[in-house]
Image 1 (tube, helix red, strand yellow):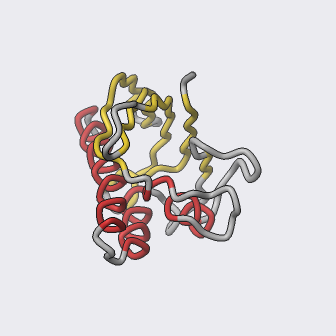
Image 2 (tube, one colour; image 1 turned 180 degrees about the vertical axis):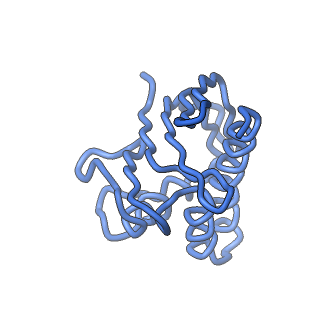
Image 3 (cartoon, one colour; image 1 turned 90 degrees about the vertical axis):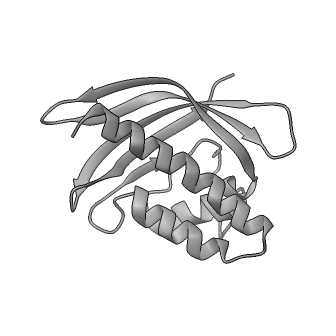
Length: 148
């Protein structure tokens, strides 16, 4: 894997989050879009995943596909507002640091999230530890938090 593969993955992740919100606005099947997004970007289908989403306080970790889905599109956890349903107009990758060797594929950086029809941005720091499944990168560990 090349560093450009990690950058392409991050582009796909950003586009996927934005797409879920757009489908929600258009009254489409955003739940199905979110399930596809999780399947494409996270390794829940093949191995354990550790997931600490950006805006959690009561249930800090979402280490199952159902809990991750709840975070992205509202679900069984009361604090979940539907991160991907915000919706986001733009997500910019501001900084990227990568370890990409034979044993490890890790990305750490910052995203700037711009909500639709708002001028403010939310800066988020993230760390993604990747695994490879069927030749594709998938997130095995996701940790993110707002930068204040």
